[in-house]
Length: 322
Image 1 (cartoon, rainbow, N blue to C red):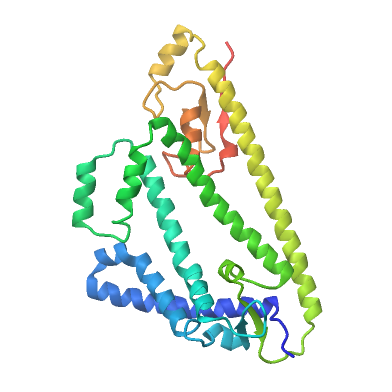
Image 2: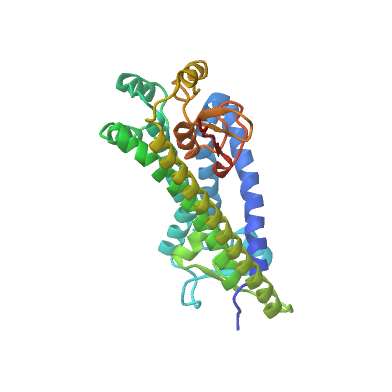
């Protein structure tokens, strides 16, 4: 009787598939760059990689064959009953969820983020760019631009953290999924968990399967604990930033002394180009308005001047008492 594949087999299978997919992507990128030129290749690099992955899985999984990684460790795909191989519809859903859906989701979030960052939307220039340089998002981008134009400045400002939260949520979801894989021993990829495709061994292996699964369960528990600590630290940092922002809001309308006014005129915030009040310093030593730099950190965790990476909780709110 066939047994379910264990964690090391699934990981080695995924690594082997990734090796061959990387080789196929490199060959496809080289061929496309030779034929279409470097400019077109830079514009279509992501699409070429997605098509390469689709071709790899179309020739293996979608055709009813094992992938090279699955053949390497002698495992086969089965449906939730674990008695039959997945149907063609289920295999098609698996391939699309594994390759195409992440690409589309990433493109949509990046496009929405860029449109929200644009302060002045020039519809004529947008139409001209779309007509001259076609891209895979050319049909979807006008819809996103129209939707963004319908929002006022306050709504756009409120939507930026939402987009950032969705991006972070996807990362957290993937980390939770990997930890659950370590614990349960099934569904190494999120697409396989969604489509219900699992693996059975083709040949029995004389290994201590119970010991292996116990070790990986421990690793999964440690991964969940690490993720919980990380989320707790981020939540605490968010609370501190909100409390500091409330303090800044309470003190922003306080009258300033002439000396403070003259010094603020000689030092402006590089982000808003206005007089810097209630300054905040980054770990690299640059000064900004508290509200400006916190809004900047909602989407980019780096200094606007020197591009040094830092976590938002390392910002220091400077408030002088006179």
